Length: 289
Image (cartoon, rainbow, N blue to C red; front, side, top):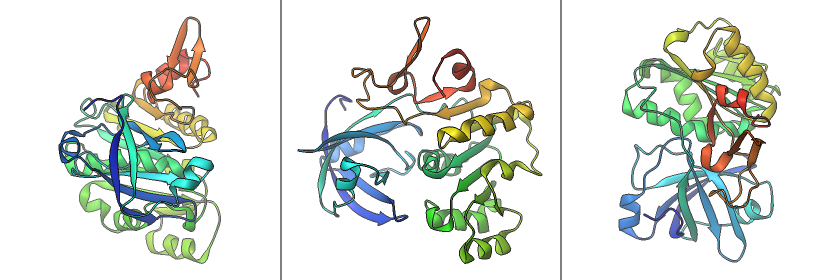
């Protein structure tokens, strides 16, 4: 399919994840386009709402699950506010996928450490289910930091993995900042995998084979500094630390210039060269993180 052409997609289901986020399950109207559509975890699409505009958003479903795809949309502005009013059966435009995605083939046979903060859980969910479905990775760790129980994205899936993840070689740990009866209940039921604090607190007591582990990070900008320090202190190579940096993207094809970072000697377009970068790339590109 042509990545520069917009195709009609029908909304199959709308699920409220939190008071601010909704999960949209979509399928292309044209069955041939739907059959051809595939992507890598970490890639994104452009949502085109006719008469209103368009915006980029990461795919949060796994390409291993065919016939549909999913987008987690936070209500933050005019476009996403309108998106939240759409219902099952409504049609929107989709073009893409764009970006490089995570190098899943390169990481096969290794441990994966996924570190998510807030909305960063959405693109890493694609990696999580790809890894679990394929069975081509060793131990999978998911460290997820959230503000409160009400803000946990994909709550049912997270709780299921807290209960049964060990049998799937998946260790999930959750940190929350705002205490509530629900969080206290989770902490009592799943201690020490659930604790009050920030996502870096989840590293306590964990040991990783740094020669056979890749770290994949997505979250608010302030989180990267502290998570990367934690990883470097454990001697994880900067080349094994991957970050997805989608917050500056707009057009998706490198034409608007909105996501350009760096200097005259090292310029990158986040939408074309990323949105996934290694920490080595961040060190050599000013303004990347």
